[in-house]
Amino acid sequence: ELGTVAGTHDCFDHRSCARPIDSFARYTSSGRHGVACAEVIHDIAPDAELHLVRVTSLTSLENAVDWAIREEIDIISMSLSFFNESAYDGTGPVNDPMDRLEAAGVLMVTSAGNYALEHWMGSLVDSDHDDLVEFQPNQEGLWVYWNAGRRRLDITWDDWNTCGATDLDAYVYSEAGDLVGTGVREQRAPEVRDENEACTPVERVTVNAAEDGWYRLMLRRTRGDDDATVHVFARGGELYTPVFEGSITDPGTHPSVLTVGAVRERNYLFNSAQAYSSLGPTLAGVPKPDIAGPDGLSTSSFGPSGFFGTSAATPAVAAAIAVLMSEVPGRSPRAAADLLIRWAESDQATWEAVDPALGAGRARLPPLERASGGCGLGPILPMMVLLPGLGLRRRSPRTRRTG
Image (tube, rainbow, N blue to C red; front, side):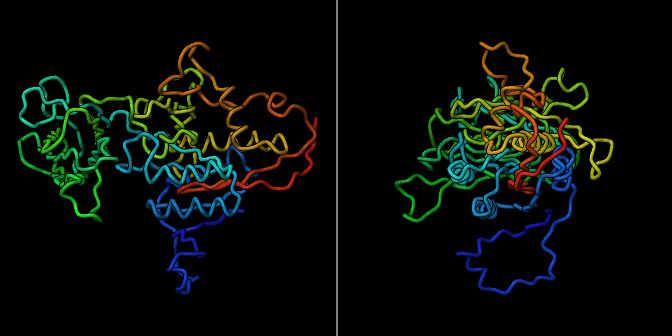
């Protein structure tokens, strides 16, 4: 069963449901990304029941989660990153719905992100006391290479519980010294803030890059101490001095979700993680990703050149979990995921910590007899949701030919 679900309102309590729905209107969006994710799942688990869900915001994510729980979805595959919604520590509004999924027994499989080369993390160091943050010793600028166009910088710091204690302003300059973007929202101190005034410790900067080249971010601290940890994501760029660690995006930082890194499909079992695949741990110290999957996959949408990134690896891992669920009646999504983790191909010795780029290792399916504990029972296929993408729900068992 394959269909599209768009503009996910929960019609039990959303005011928009009082309006009649135009059944002839087009609610889908264009683009290859979501379709390619569906193709990956269909290639690996062709009998899986897929439901496509379009998510474009935090609100639509919350509604999609509620829908998935109500429809008794088994697995959600989400190749999507959220920025500036938390300190990347597994908390915050994006991660709250993950708690509901865990309580309902729905497994969220999500991408780690492709931001290892686009991420910086560090403390507010200002050794010369001029209120400019030093990204390296005695270096007051963070250099980013961008191609020409409109670019985004997402900046947040771990001041979510005491927002306003620290206030940062962001300025981006071209190599010639021209100001090409600013983020100067004021984070007002609690004692001077109105009772209902919103405060978030974030800056979002739109950069108008006139040409390919290097651009410099300057961060000015207008208030606060040195103990805040800052995250910078230079989306679509490449940092001169990236910090790979801590580059996992939400909701991949949540402890209960299965977060997936990416490994090139060619020579898969012998490859390291892709250079861009985001690394853990999270700011809360949780090791992430949990596992890695293949990318560079051939799909109808992307052709033989391949579908790359953790967006491709995530549906591959989700589909493998669906296959393991189909082998044993009653096997839960979490139990199937745990089995996949145990069989992952790892370069680490058993006594070593998990790999910060691969997690438990490269996902691979165990031999059938190890996965099933016997034969003769047909697949019990789960139903999967991809956000934006698909969902799997369990069907009734059916007999298959054994041999």
